[in-house]
Length: 168
Image 1 (cartoon, rainbow, N blue to C red):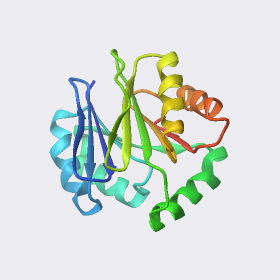
Image 2: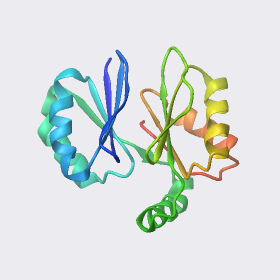
Image 3: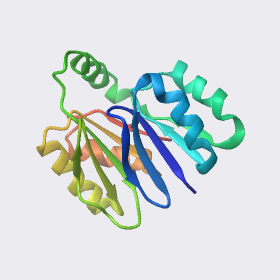
């Protein structure tokens, strides 16, 4: 299965493997980026900063060619997500950390406004979570097969200090 992650951020591809692409796009370019991604993707995953109206527009454009999913947050993270959104708007927010499932773990790499790492197992997920938190991450989002169980692990590792989004 090929997954294409689209997040609102500095334009460009941050990760490209045989199974996954992580790409930053401007809000205005989201629909065109999804249209371009759909033919090569089985699944398009949208970051938590993209609202349901935009997600519905992506679904309409992509049609049946790819499954479209929106990153979500558990009830326990809602106040933290709201605080992150306010801080994001004023530019006073820590970078996002995006983790994705992969067979071979990768280091945590800093890009403009976001840190990204591939994690092969729970041990590495815990390590990358601690590293991202130590670097000042303000939010963590999980992609490419890291679901609710991984989100619960991240919440525990951060002592519930960071909002954690995931694709269910």
